[in-house]
Length: 147
Image (tube, rainbow, N blue to C red; front, side, top):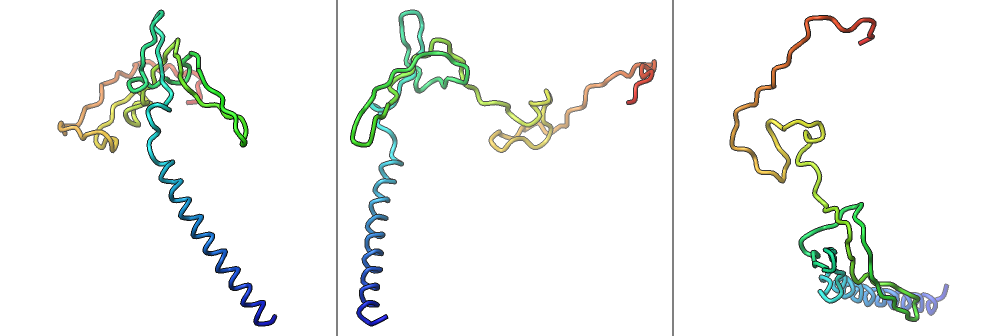
């Protein structure tokens, strides 16, 4: 390879790096736009149907899986294709989402003694809870049972 070709390759590499820097700056601008909160006018509304009245519950209630209703959307066409944008959700049968289980023992129908979940405040009562007494039957009902 002669010196002229090496110089051309180096200039091309420098040009590519400058273009990458420019694209990175543009990407930072795009990230800023994406990370900003969606303006209120573009947010879909969640409406709860109550007879002939629609109540706006967008900021107060979160519909859970199994809720039933209707959606409205608008369609936009441009050089890149056809796109739809959700406008509103009219919930006719609301199942309100509630955060599941307060702690690990809830799954077993028990209460936690000692440490609790990180998000919960520690109980101030430190006396340990006594287990409920159980009675054992006098007769042996295990006729022929392997356990």
